[in-house]
Length: 252
Length: 263
Image (cartoon, rainbow over all chains, first blue to last red; front, side, top):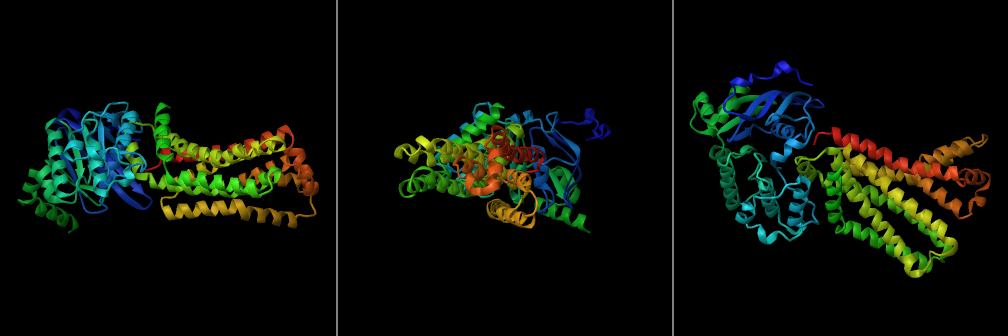
């Protein structure tokens, strides 16, 4: 599938990269979702994948999870090639954009199910506490409100203390209090050495959380590097204006 | 494999509380009870019941199957982000729906026979075939529903195709058979007809049961040929095998599709 000469020179890459995306392309029928995308995700940092709608954000995240199979190129996560073998995912926590749990199970049963499937025990119940989910644990998911389901979705992603967290629009659908709790949790997980990849439409939030940015435009990487580098290279102080500059520069 | 069983266990846990599955079982129970009470009992009740089973079971399996898989799409994505093999997850999901549906069918149709004592004597044999047919139809049409919803991204389209398939297998296929029989009335048609019936799981169930009820004589020469074929051990095995193939084929295709698919 991949040619070996497409590998980057490993010895030069510092600090350590948890995720390496190398020349990944994906086409859905006539739409090119990803066009030779390459970037790295640095360990112990928060990386935001940004871009306008249909830029390929979801596709690249799904490719990291093994949900979407690239047509060419290679993704490695902690040196394991993403190729269908599922073991690497035991170190991974995923928060999808919208949670959709089996409606007749209780939240506790959903946790038991995941625990069973992962053959690991849920050790991080912090978010259940902080998001006040504990009283809801024995209610069937059917009876939970959309916001509560989204809180559950967030708490489940952290449940197994993953070393890599992939969060798709993590604060969408959360109230301001819950969203602040989640942001603190993300930073805490990073301080405990987890690596975090997230997407978001709220640039203020990205500015608050992210140290690195991968900016996708029409399926290509328009920028990959630290937030500081982005601000410096565009000559802007605010992330908002830096991102606008990036989009305009590409469009013209 | 153990992952498949874990998924199966939890999905069954979910679906045994599903209002749809419970409602389906209850409806079958009421229908069977009514047919046994007012339908004259004995073989006649079994024939009326057969018509219910042949129409109702495939329809419910198809609709619940497609709705279930479309509805679970986001959760499947979450499960696929766990350390599981796709194939194991697929089998767990399929069993997780098919087994509760089989249970609803067996309990719904079986209980009234138990409490009315209507399943004894001459009815025993046909009743066994009725159950076998119902179970195999559930497995086959659940597999077909899974295949349809994996092939079509659009929920409305998938549901439409499922209903169209059901309509073809219950009504249009029979019309097609009648057309073939009228058009080729001058030719010996028995063998081709046996072949054509093997191609439709619903017809297959009907023929198997009617032959068991000794009404084959009423179907004239064709009936006699059928009886000679389906009545023999080989014929029975072929028919059973064909029904099983109606499960295995869509399930196998769905399995392959599930493993290759982009979610």
